[in-house]
Image (cartoon, rainbow, N blue to C red; front, side, top):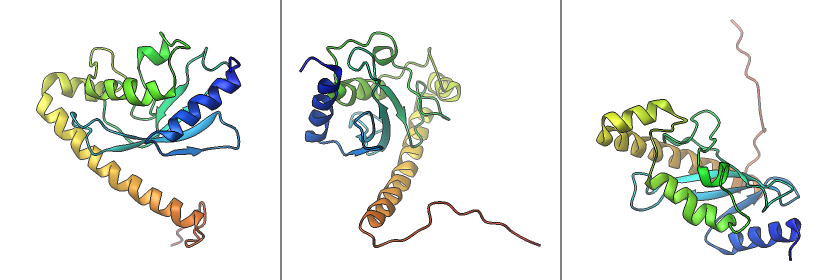
Length: 177
């Protein structure tokens, strides 16, 4: 069980046996989505974020890539790419950590204790430092909006997989005058 591929399988299975919805992106076990729920003691409570996880070939010796797919308002998450500024993932990763640690410890800690002095989202950091109550209200507003959007996306995805909804993947609308 010491090879990276066995460890990857074991960590992914532990995550899937937990309370996490995991959706594989490809046939392999290196790219997948995990639905992550905001911690209850935070303004992110009630929110659900789709997290894209990519495991490098050298996992667990090299850290996973973690990114928010749907919008989150947070000083340490890039608003455009969803990239996360989290030292334990980006700099101090150890093979002692696993995917369950990411979703049960690291991401909840990120949402509970934002660091506005090292921002990826300067607007969120500035608002948090200037007016904490306004920052928390903005978080709640965006969280509730994105929860509704994710619910719709999951419903459409479920209906497609059950063949009860046939929608084209992408269409280009051309308007003529």
